[in-house]
Length: 116
Image 1: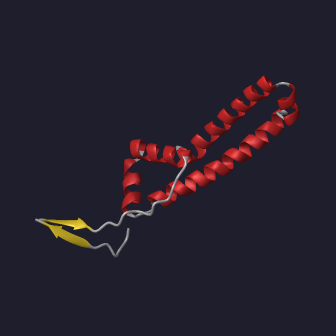
Image 2: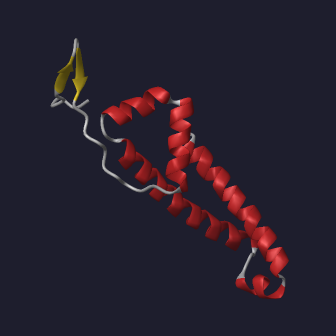
Image 3: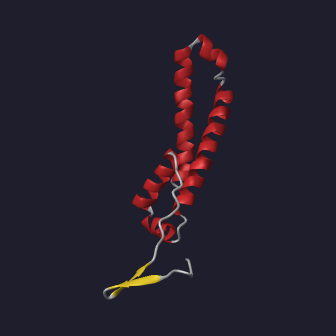
């Protein structure tokens, strides 16, 4: 917690002087992590909010997840033989295979980063 937290009095209550957190943009992965924490881990969410670490956490999760998604899709495509040649020869098969790969990569990210 921040030891330099100051308060102001409103009536009989002391209200903490909280600054608005930095406006760090997050992508889909950061928003999914936010939703998970708010719905399933509200104590962690509130603690990070009060310590002004929430937006930085979401930005970091978003960056890590995006990198992992790209790496996993490349690796899985190489392992399954989904190449540009397949794309040129049979677009529907390539699209189907890439959709399966993207869904599998998304599942891995959800389990290892978002819901962890």
